[in-house]
Image (cartoon, rainbow, N blue to C red; front, side, top):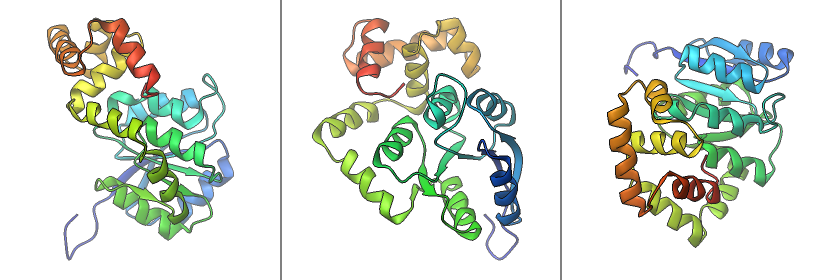
Length: 221
């Protein structure tokens, strides 16, 4: 953002299955936050986000379609974009399980729909700049969930991987072929092979089957 001048416009895709809520939220957002696309289901959201590549996605946690995974399924379907597109979960639910599930899937924050348009606008700006944002009561859930020794161990292992290696690992673990990963991430097959080799070495695994099991056990697909 440029100090002393009009804030830069942030492009947002709004994902919620209630059209009337989307309309109301669009009207309440600050003028420098541009809703460039909308979606009301899991499949539509994944397609629109890949098509538009927004800076931020405002993502409802409970959505129809897909395999019933809601917002977390959208995040998994957009895992290759997580390095450049930030996801902010927005829900009526303040249940701990909902919060932890979407954060583990890659969301950068979670706010409840009870907050004002100005507060959501501020949250969008903060997430776009790289911050993690939570409604006050929800931050405790995240600290509790990610404070256990088991999760700390997982985080230590994940910290060994670069952003690109993490993207490749998630796609390989979800059953993508090397060629499909290369196409998804716009890199060569040889580069994919190199990344996979590095991931296996860093995580001390022998093959992609062990990698898939490792990812499934930690719910990071």
